[in-house]
Length: 290
Image (tube, rainbow, N blue to C red):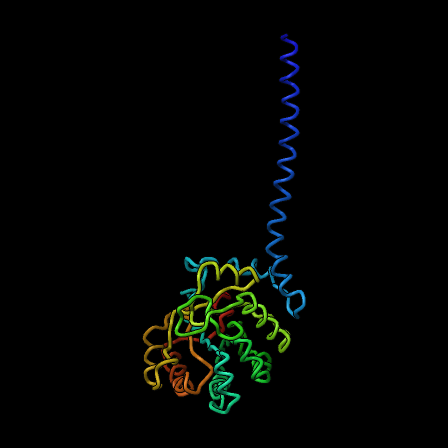
């Protein structure tokens, strides 16, 4: 009886050991598969596109972790350098495109902004919607060829990822809003945008994670120029000068027209007065470079 009991204990111990080995092996494989699934799903979205998600960029962006807010968005850069990043959103919605094609609006591209930046040798970052890029492909190509500028992703048709959001329409395909614009910009310039900015700055935590799953960092701002609603240049200048500090990201618009009619008038004064305060200008990428 004693021998039988001892024999049963040995058998149970052997089976327990085998189970543990299978568990360890299976858990390891499951962990590896889960990390690959995230990349595979994003790659599948772009399998027929010209760009590929740059997952290796996540390693590069490890240094940016400390600058993300609780939702994962980067709204400003380091405070240890007296630099400011001027950013310009190039919006285009289906209605804006319709107004342009009908002749109701002459243009949604205020080229004088770019001319001012070039004349004063001021770096800038353009957050461009895919629909705007399709409408003004030559402008996008010229930005890409100029070392002063960088081009980033601002969705495809400026639909909001979270509503209500300043009257913007709700995005029906959030994946497309990211990947289609990546593809358009890549095909025009041969460059992969590294950053994404949500239309209207409206988003949820899950939206941020979605964008990050494509290898992009989400960029917001800490200085609102007010050019989308202020119709006089002095008001825009006042807003920027009152709030710009070391490492600030300033949001303005490239559209001109009725949506941002005074930006080009305000820009020269903004540049001159910030320089008088000792600020230099950088792109968003340069903001995080030593």
